[in-house]
Length: 436
Image: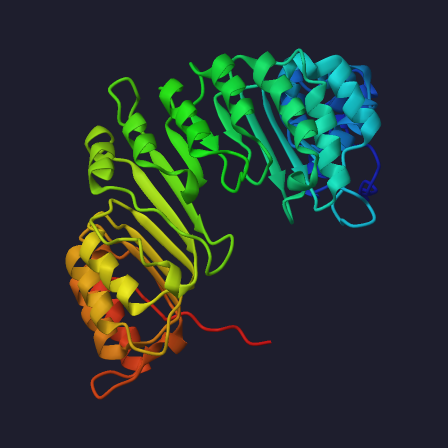
């Protein structure tokens, strides 16, 4: 009588490996050494430099520093110049912010060893003056940099405005003088002034392409005109309306100047009821459009109804309009008459009178309109349907609160959903006011 082999008896090595494979147990390739069976830190340590560098670029400064202590190879990557070309300094006060701040010792290490490598730099500060002052202190030390882009960002209130103007301007001038190749600058809500802009122009006029400086009260129309006159490569500009002038638009339209691509204008009432807004000539707007026919002109309005009087009395080539406060029916009517290039319109609020006529006029005259948003307004369902029919499928964005629509004898809310969907060629629903 033959006796069967027991479960672990008399199998050849190949048979044992085959049986283990069929049972789903893990298998290892034998290479004569057991080292290949160990997923140890040696595997991580042998990652190619470019892979580790890519990973490090997603880490905060603190995490980069911790990772650099894993092994010598990672420490070498920590000091590769490419890692420090783009960096964001986060400066927050622990007592007032939940955000993690960049450690001062690590900041000093960067300035000492990598300042000359920094090219794309931003500073993100909280609402504390101390954070903004710390950012200025760092800027003052960037004397060996060739920075190409600079951004100063206030995450809450504009804390840079609380810094001594002389301290801020002195720090900013260090960067303007030493960089020589700045192409993009975002310095909204800061105490930058005309003399510092002249320094910027004197050292970076050939390279500057983007300048965002909304809410900079120490800059005059003459200061921004100096930038437009000398920086002929400027393609994007953001500023407050009080800096806009006929002379500025003509400077941006000169033969020497490249085609402007984006002009953002913030129209803000600093002293409600007391601010006088000037008028820009139609001829100046026309000159800009002749020179830069594809330019996007974006205007943000934060005014009270009585302050809209000077605007849109004549044809204005604005493409994007955003109203952060209530706007009158008369103002919307003027937009329909005098804004033929309008692409996007957002109205936060209006009175209690339906806007049917105004919307229909906008649909008739603004043939490029593709996006509209209405907040606290009123439109009859019939008027809204007429507007949608006139615009047709070109409306890529249609954001209307359900409370805006007033049912009438022709349409109710349920019918509006299906009829608008047919006109747009896609499923559409009005937005719902969240309740909690």
